[in-house]
Length: 166
Image 1 (cartoon, one colour):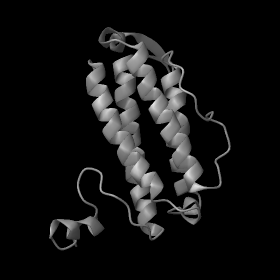
Image 2 (cartoon, one colour; image 1 turned 60 degrees about the horizontal axis):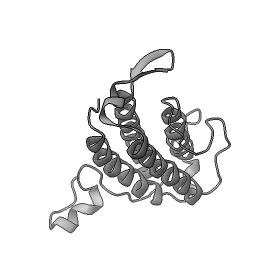
Image 3 (tube, rainbow, N blue to C red; image 1 turned 120 degrees about the horizontal axis):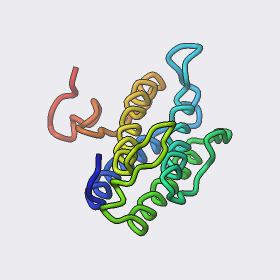
Image 4 (cartoon, rainbow, N blue to C red; image 1 turned 60 degrees about the vertical axis):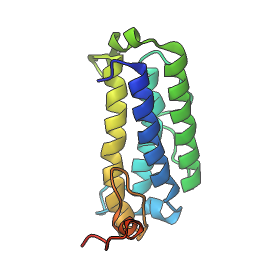
């Protein structure tokens, strides 16, 4: 849970930056990759994090523009990337301009529970991390390379003068 706006701003900048790098690595063809026939495809997960960012933020009383939860997924990876980027930037601006540290303790109804705003911001970030992990599996299956987030990806080890992890 966040108790300081500045702490959230730093974490949000890093986490959304990592998410944008991953989204930029997607191709239009890769959006249809899934692990099994009944599973969610890569495009579904990418679109889910895109629509859930404004959806969850707006439940706190912020005004973050973005696609609605039930909107159709675009056919292109760049459209998903751009929609996420716009919502992520808008969320940061809204929090920075409208909230003070004490607003992070305000409780609002979130899915039938009372969540403090600081907890909602924390969950938005962990939600991104959770789904980025899912995306890496599908990206590997699609034959895509992707950027490391909390350390180098397999392909990035060479940039550090080390052999790729086996």
